[in-house]
Length: 349
Ligand code: ACO
View 1 (tube, rainbow, N blue to C red):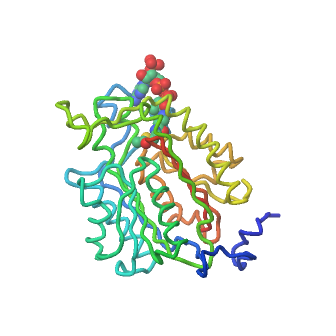
View 2: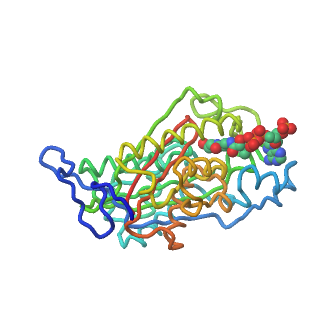
């Protein structure tokens, strides 16, 4: 028999909260996902294609990472283009007009231009002008951070309908001569529409960071620090993969524990784990920590590789559209990335 925590009723039951969350006289609502969408560039780069560029093999990439192919943005195709498409599809799925949106939060570390923010560019293309719109840079945790921020806006009554997007063209930062990193990344975007609702909803979100790990994963140049004469003006991902791997596994282990504790839930109450898609071995370690078999874990890393902020919402949209994730199920979203940053969201879909 399934055990449900009293605060989190089974699908169809009325939430039995004796004390609904309140803020002064305002009864706080849940932020509920009412639509998802995603977008991938047309061009696919397979492991076999990469074998022709660097000294690597399909076998090495698949066994070390789980990746078989990735999508690569075409020349001139931007993060904003992918974000716009993903947002349009999420709005369509939600049956919501862009003009109804009062908040856009977009996670990215590869904005189209320095300013305006990609959120503002997408807002204008959607025709949602006037609402709050801003980017969040938390590297690969960008979407889950953005979701946490939007959730806080909704819980405080400042937003009724929000668009949360994770979008990247991370391959623009890739050094195609460096086999250690170029095989790992891809481009893509995902989005969700959130609505303030009496029905659960996001139960809890966590956002954490430790800037002391900068040396393990960083992109060394920028407007203020300056660019260099190196190829691509010095824009490239620097990563000590093995070290990142170790910290990621350990950190995600404690993150999922903290999240469950915060929500007062048990491992067996989670229907689906929707993790950041960086490496299948990291995903398997988190699933093991949760005592979850891999058939309850959404895996898209094989087809998308690591799309940074795009990864979790791409996986979520795939899970929804393929019919795996059903209304009323409990989902645990988690991510880990440069910063280091790490974040989670536990929600009822
Ligand atoms: N093809 C063939 N051989 C390779 C390749 C390649 N593409 N890349 C590295 N190798 C070699 C190395 O040179 C090394 O050779 P050596 O033993 O002769 O020295 C060997 O393979 C093993 O290298 P490791 O780095 O130890 O391999 P590991 O098993 O750790 O896998 C990987 C590397 C896949 C990068 C892994 O460490 C990983 O996934 N790390 C985490 C990445 C991550 O999660 N990043 C976070 C998000 S990114 C962001 O926020 C932007």
